[in-house]
Image (cartoon, rainbow, N blue to C red; front, side, top):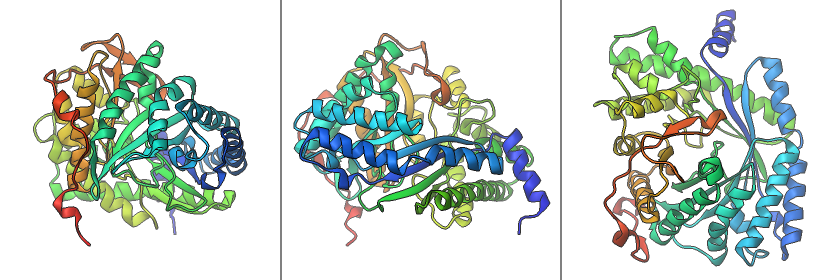
Length: 454
């Protein structure tokens, strides 16, 4: 039973501590939309998304109103489009037509983002995969709500370095084609290793082939709630610190579980997973970096940051996993620079560097996220950054990702404004020594020895 104290406590978390449900994401399989011609494929995709997701936004708004729980985003993820379009798409331009159909469907149902303009190429690329990847810059430049992701490696298969090299070029081309908007297209493009099939968060969301025809996944948030809880036990022992984070994560996840089950019931679509990640926003007090500082760091990036983040990530998982029947996605703590006011401040004062962020990704849920770099950074350097981050994921059997934004016309010290949840970011310096000869090798890096568990 829920008592009146718990009701009042939850209300306080919502009203004063920035608790929200970050997203309800409906995953939709498009495998049955395949057709022999592009026009038929686009028609099938548009019809299926608009039919299944027709009431998604209204349902989210109704639940939010009735329960008093802010639900910030309503989104859709679809089957990786390179699989769906293989029969119909003969060129990159054909895939761009599919991107426009997806964008029209997203606009029609009223969601803010649609993920799944994606390819899974961890071991090799089909012709269809390569066509889609080469279409990404144009697709993101010409659409508003489409998010794209490419999985270039896994613990089981190793790293596809041909795909890594191609993605370095693709990121740079996307930046160039969207330079009038401070290269905003790159904020909707992520390169992953060990990508999960059920991630509700953009830009990496897609609906995996092992998923049902449609499913409801929910991503919760709540860095502000955790920070407030830690303020109440300032200076306490590690035992008290860990218990406080676990209890708080449990409460946050229970809110997400309630919303997920209710959305599932009202829409008549199965409940999939809760992603219990701490997802920050640019709002004051809603920052993972500020949690790390409350734990005892002068600024995020100081010595001890990786250990503090490891503790936070682990306790969030331990607390949240007991609060939901099904936990999935990424689940832990996000460290996107532009979306976290504390991270932005740490970069601006020199406490946090790209290299320290890379070290932090060894112990958290995702990778180098929403990082602005100089627009003249070579494609091979971007590919090297992607390879480094993917290697961390491959060897540590975890999901890692790179969402990096080479801002055309900007250099170190400049600031880029993205707006909304994407926030703003200082342009960070990048190591200028070349890795060209390394990334230009053909083939793939083999899977690590510990992957052979069969």
